[in-house]
Amino acid sequence: MCQNATKTAATLMAAIEPTIKSLLTLTGQANTPNGIAAINAYDDALVALQNWQSGTAAQNVLELITAFQTVYNSLPIPSEYLVLGNIILAGIETVIGVVTANSPAPVAPADATASPEERQAMHQAAVSADTTAKVQSLVPGFKRSIWHTPAHQYNEAWNKAVVAGGFPATLQVAV
Image: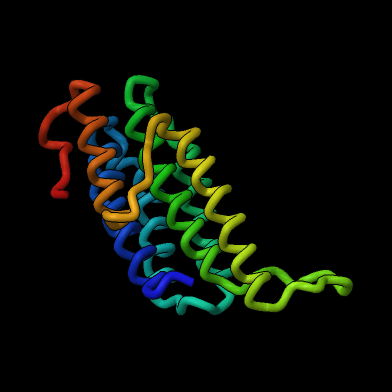
């Protein structure tokens, strides 16, 4: 398991917040009922995540993150901003992956021969592969680094998309 899964996931989730607010402002949705609902759902998920302990079941955290995703996905994001929207979704998928991989593995079938440690390692590997595939489908060309934190990588991907898309430089975040 990740040594600091709660910190890793919460730091990434916190890095996502200013980008959500920037995108909502850029698209004129920051003060709409849907925009406010998205921020409220995000805040609920962040608080639950900050209170979660690695190695424990994360059902409540995952439900609140999924609730945020549902509200976020209902926002009418104009097509010219989808690249930024997909980076936000990729960040959320990464948070879900960190939480899921660092929660107990599913109960093994009765005929399983793997030890609990082996099942946990297989669970983590499967979640990592699934999360990587989801992130790469949302942000093609993204390469995960073992040398930088997920929050750092998220901020770099966001800033690169801002520059590449010709969006206002004020949307860039500190790396």
